[in-house]
Length: 481
Image 1 (cartoon, one colour):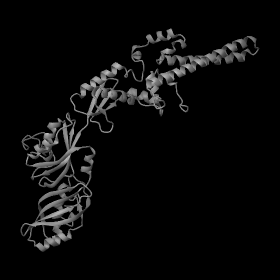
Image 2: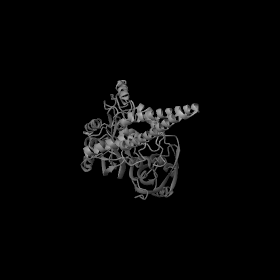
Image 3: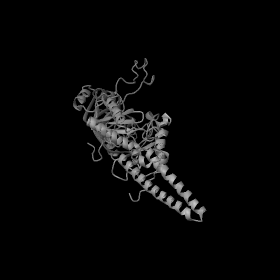
Image 4: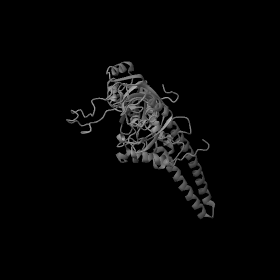
């Protein structure tokens, strides 16, 4: 502590308790804030008492000198300076006493007068002994808050938690003034979080987790107000959509926007169900969540099936009351639907959403192509050869231009194979390509917005009659199957 300067002047303005004064130098000495503050005040009180003793000795010496000196004016001026210094030291000592260091009562003059002044102070000003902490660290006060936390969290299953402190505006402003960029200080938040966290650990045997807690408990220790942030749980896996005609996510009715009308039979939905709803329903019941969010690694059109190894997804259950459940029976319940199947289920984390939603995973499609004119097997084989490692310039398709930016995107087709010839006008292609390539437009060309296209390469008008997603390749090392 040789290089640390302790600023006691703050005690002349605010009667900070031992704990709050010690917190200003929390990083300077390994002990409690209370003990540190008390020790620093005591050291200052001793220093002031020694200073006063020296000043009184000087004053007595001047009095003796005054009796035998002819230069009375100069001595008188020095005497006045010493008296002023004595009054300053006495005021500092009094302020240290008023901040709670009652052990120095015998050092402070006019102690009864000080006590009488304190007793007649306005009740609103006298309500708390310290203007900074306002007694929030009182044992009974802390116990009231901890019991309230236990009551609030009793309906939720959790293993880990984190205490967060909310300070009133006036306290934040006062703290800013008191700390004043002091690098040795810690916020009152840090101390309260630490103490309350320890109490909850002792009462619940739960664990404090700073990175990814199950529950964040926000506390205003000044008015005992508590709010819970129940963090989501994440279930990740892969899904197959076995039938056409259902969207990936819930769609509000276009007419009533979810309110319910005659057109949607008062359901508020554009389609009776969705992949999201089929998967989420049993999980919401099991985990007793407030709401859910479905995050897929891309999406297929309503009329497209998702086959093969399935599409990766993350189901986010928000504000769950239950955090642990056997995933297998939930998977089996979804798979009974006959419309959607899920597999490879496991608990995930929030960052899985970023990986699944933001990564443009390569995909393998099975496209059922129908040509307006007849086509020979040789023409199909030539088409397959032309499409190997082909670069596609694709302007935003007309069918999605109302909800997508009008851009030209460059995508690659890496491999194409003939799956089977159905008849003289129809055949199936297996296409391995970049994510984000619109396959229907790759087939029909979208009036020249996709270049080249199957229609252009064959010089025949073609459409994609049926489309299936066969694989979503969510690992860089994974090759087209």
